[in-house]
Image 1 (cartoon, rainbow, N blue to C red):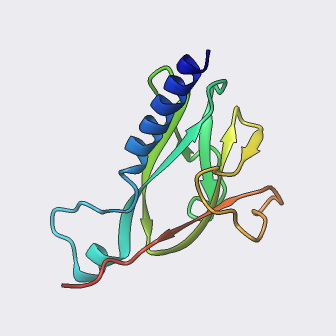
Image 2: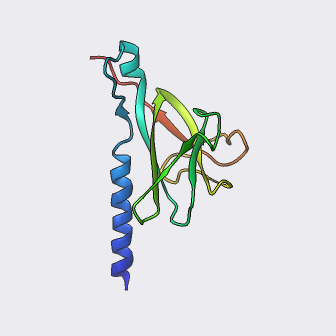
Length: 132
């Protein structure tokens, strides 16, 4: 009885881990400047929302605009993901599901302050790559 549920949980964990493996990767660029190569990163955002029809990423990096950054459903498991380029530093964000439900990222630290709209939100810190 627990076997199928355990297998589904492990598959979900593996899918999320694979998507999160993209987090904090150096930003690719054909000719990065010294500042550019150390100050921006591609960051993956992932949400498990099996009943969602739409998921958007909102945060201080896109003026909390739910029309700016949409997530894409990957497969049939309800995993939604997107990757965006962010500058080094601390960023507050959340997901908006089906244009109305504000959801903090369950895989990230909670922001101690509320979002722009008083809803729960999360924090991601983008590290600066040390110069070689």
